[in-house]
Every structure is written in structure tokens, then in C-alpha cells.
Image 1: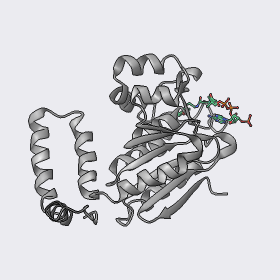
Image 2: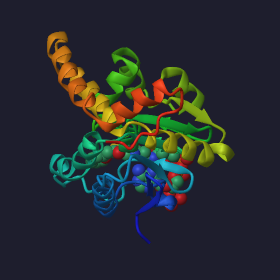
Image 3: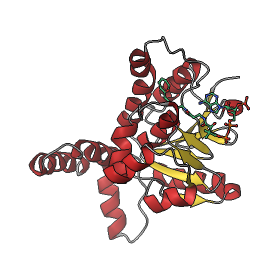
Image 4: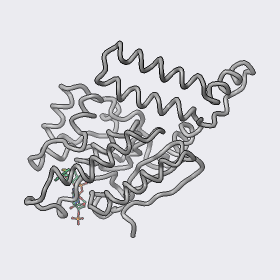
Length: 255
Ligand code: LHQ
């Protein structure tokens, strides 16, 4: 059984973490297969990516039975989690975390590395790390601080409190909560909607937000000007303007 399954529907690639008996906890194999799946997602024909989990988990983070305390933890993080978190950030298309269920530890960090999170009402979120005496790794401190603000992120990450999907929505951690039965359909609808968007402008928006986190206003204004000049040369911009003039919905090609 592969530990990561990949499927494609139109321009949407779905990546399913597939160790349901262990709530999709990360192993070396799962990391490697996730990396391959993220490489495949670079195909320009893919215009939106969904990451989800099989069974009742999104991911419970590191498989705690497949990790020895004498190991090279920093080296392991760099070679596995870091590579995949950076691969998600560098994908030039939107990546949705479809949080179908339990989301803990580095599984939570992975969800936060995505561009948006949609949760099933069966999902819940647990820091995990502090429960076993660790710090939030795999981008946890980076993303959660930005998503929630320092006070809330600090309090949550040091409490190990279990957050329900509606609470996560109230906090802005997820953009939407969907009834479990309706989750696959709503997700497919949202992913297809994003895949029909002006992908190169969406990718540039993603990059600009990432750069903006540490930029001065002057730097960011300059980056926006350069990115807008590129966007204004795309077929999608021409199509957008033509569709506006003709009072019809635009048909974007992504380029
Ligand atoms: C698991 C796990 C798991 C293995 C559930 N591993 N089997 C990076 C670098 C180096 C070192 C360590 O870590 C990291 C990054 C990290 O991610 S650290 C944080 C690791 N994650 C956690 O500490 C979470 C541990 N899991 C839990 O606290 C609970 O399982 C949660 C709250 C996620 C879910 O609770 P329940 O819904 O009650 O499910 P459960 O506990 O019954 O789990 C179901 C099965 O999954 C069970 O197996 P079994 O054979 O007994 O049915 C668990 O043992 C297994 N499982 N998480 N991380």
C-alpha cells in the first residue's frame, strides 16, 4: 500500500496521506512519497493541489514509534519536513489543506504551510508537540504566529488544547467548516474553482504574501510593481479585460 496516494481530476491534483490506522503519522516513506507527489504537482497542467488524509485523520504528526531519541533530529527535520514544507510554498499554484480529521503536531504545521485550510466538522486540531516536551517544528512557529498572532499562537502551542473545527474557524485558522458528509463535494467544488483561476496571478500573489512577511513597504511596493507588470503581459489579463468588456465570465488558461 502506498503511504501517499495521488489522483488527478481535471487540473486538480489530490494528494492523500495514507496511513489511516496511524492517523497518517509521518514515516520516512510517507515523507519521500509526499515529496514525489509535490514534484508531480509542478506540472503546469495542475492548477490547484489538495492535500488530505485517508480515514479519520489528516495527520497526527511524526510517527512516534518510528523515531529514536538518539537520532539526528535536526538532520531528520531538514531532510524530510523542511523539504516538503518548502516544496508547498514554492509551488506556483494554490495548495489547499483539506483537513478531514485529526490534525496534530507536524501534521498541523503541514496544514498551516498550505495556502488555505478547509475543515470537515469532524476535524480537530491539537498542538501535540508540547504534550511530549517538544517545540512546534516544521514551520509551526512561523505559520501559526502569522495566522493567529503571537499571543493566541503562544497560548495554544503551550497548552496542548484540543481545538474543534468551529473554534478553528472562529480563530481564522480555517477558512471554512463543512459537514463531514458534504466535505468531499464542497472540496472538489472549491479546488475546481481555484484551478479555473488566473493561476500565474494567484502564484504571484502567494509569493508576494510570503515575501511581504519580512519586507519594508518600499520593497513590497517595488515587488508589486514588477509582478503587476508581468501579470499585465499575460493572456489571462487580456482575457479578463475582454470578458469584462463583453459582460461574460472570463475563461482563464492559467498563463
Ligand atoms: C500514532 C500517532 C503518532 C504513531 C496517533 N505516531 N502513532 C519531529 C521531529 C522529531 C521528533 C518528533 O516529532 C516531530 C514532529 C511532531 O510531529 S511531534 C508531535 C507528534 N504527534 C503527537 O504527539 C500526537 C500524538 N497523538 C495523539 O496525541 C493522539 O493520537 C491524537 C490527539 C492525535 C488523536 O487522539 P485519538 O483520536 O484519541 O486517537 P488515538 O490516540 O487512539 O490514535 C489512533 C491510533 O493512531 C493509535 O494506534 P492504535 O494502534 O493504538 O490504534 C495511536 O497510537 C496512533 N497514533 N498518533 N504521532
